[in-house]
Image 1: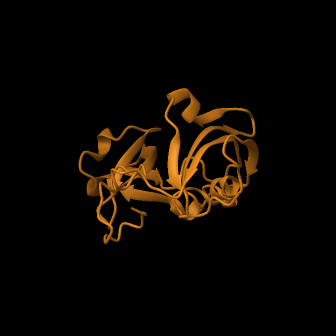
Image 2: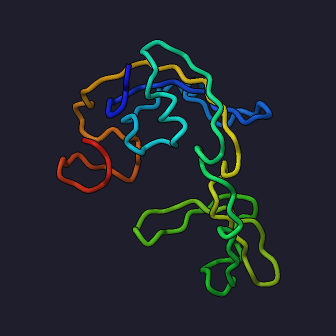
Length: 169
């Protein structure tokens, strides 16, 4: 079976190589829904689901380059606290959201606040890590849900076939 371009529903459990579970739709009880091979998922996950049969469970190991990419030192930024409103109150070790040029928020981890400067890590929290998934394909359909875009992107909110959000409606 080829699921490319189809609306699929999967359950998954994601773990790191040391066995640490980082995400699970099984625990939340809510299957992940997306259009296979439409660029909504990390490359390795899309590739794993592409040739699965409904009801099949597959275990895959995805290299960092096919997941969230390699860790990039150039994505660690140092900013003067004077340029950040309430910069002294940033929660070190936690994730905050900055507004991108496109108007959408993006996550940034606060690494440290020292000597009047804040250090931020813009890498995805799983960058540089190989991932393991146990994936079960629950459904594969040529039809999208009746309520328009069901991409799971909380910022989309779009149900217009002519929009340019990058999602299939």
